[in-house]
Image 1: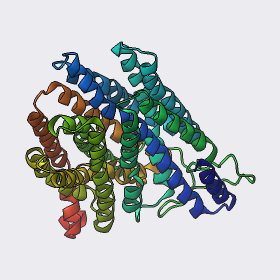
Image 2 (image 1 turned 30 degrees about the vertical axis):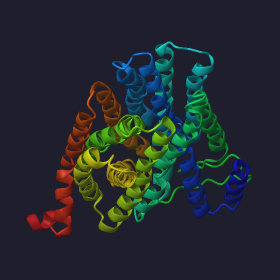
Image 3 (image 1 turned 90 degrees about the horizontal axis):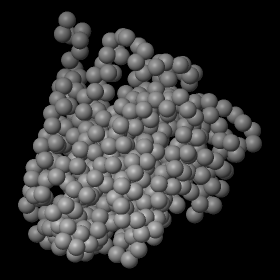
Image 4 (image 1 turned 90 degrees about the vertical axis):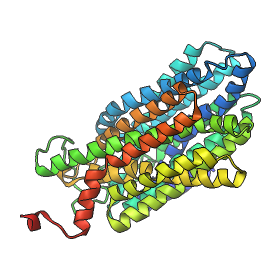
Length: 455
């Protein structure tokens, strides 16, 4: 598979066609970030097996706190480092930055699994490995969004990035399935195999990724420099910082970044609580064995794929990114309430509710972190600076990652599953309320209201 991929990508580069560069950049970054999420997911699957062991030794009272410590050692490090990662991504070659990050992530993911074979029982070993992995995994998102966002114009960006963003759910699904193979026998392999996969993808990325803006693939014989296609403007590179402009447009950009970032904080809190705790919830409440709980939990990510694509298509058609997120989030709140009370009444209900909740929760999350971030990062006040998108993406995702760290932590402290769902519903409500001003502006625009008419 890797050989066929390498030949296909190399052949596309040899043709020197802009459309081929764009297409294979899309595919390659999809595979890269799939491997990032593939390597994050095993902890939630292995957690189910570890929970059983905790009960066997009478540690029932503390098992959720121990798991919360493992989750948050990764998530807090990720959230803090993400704010700096965007600045590094804006100043370093993305191909090197992404490749090194993937290789290091493969190393630390594998180290976590090797703790099983080295018979390490000290939790601090696993916490330190998780912190290190959280730091290096921040190299991924700003880099891949910058590559894709600058290769594609705004016309169908929502649909294209909605399909592309399914890498998150695909990675979660594959990570769950791979980890489930060894979860009850040799859980160390549940981490080592994903670690090898992301490291191999890092090598592939180094040789084949074509960056947007004056960067070429090192394997192309005739080094011809390409510029990404920019909507409505020339491809020239202008060195402008994200915050250098002081115009009204820059103020509008800053407001949009803040509102979407805070919305993502609460939306990602809900998504990552499901990511890290859903298999354990299904095992505990649904009385499923670890492997079946992990397999069924992938339905939430299947819904996420559907929701991400749907959100992209609708937002492209209507031009209302904020309104699309608002409608999906406001619908998600009652669906989360229903899932908590009827979600375990039968297999068909479990399947249906997980897919629907996954679509409504992950759809806005996917739209904000991709198309919305790309729209803001290529705002006219940035004057064509391709790398500024890395900083804008990191600010939005870094703020969202605070919620991603907070959700699993709170779930670890809350002993009642019903109260966990009340927390998720509250977070979802706050997420759509934060978009109210932007929705108001979009609706007024649809109604034909302009500043000139107001005057």
